[in-house]
Image 1 (tube, rainbow, N blue to C red):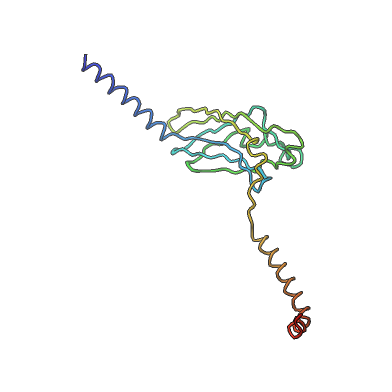
Image 2 (cartoon, rainbow, N blue to C red):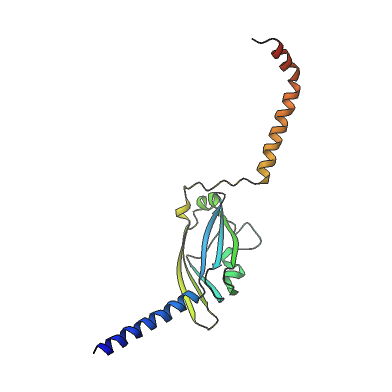
Length: 183
């Protein structure tokens, strides 16, 4: 009886070790919103797994929509090739970034702020995966975003400094008078 119990425990450990190795080596595709500069919403698709993901497809509920669906010649975001035909393969660590929307117009037009997404794909061996994910913009509302200063901000500040220094030159004669006649 002790031998049978030991065999059962060893068999369970071997099954669990095999499952763990498979889970660690599989592809894992994520799709998520990333707000930028407080107003821009980027959509990122990433394979965070260790192996290639093949035939990556997305199903959105409700159908994905953007305020730019009617403004641009690209047409509705739901009709982009990446969502209608999928991604043939996504290498490990690969990230695809898409401009999705902007916060103020999205809220004004009362478009959905949350989506349930089913991401389906397979690995090199042909094993299929279907992961349910939740995309939620609500959690970013009211956070204000992060201000990132670029070279354009530096240029603007330098122009302000130049204007200030030019003003000093014009007032230079007045400075000398004030130094000679302190109050």
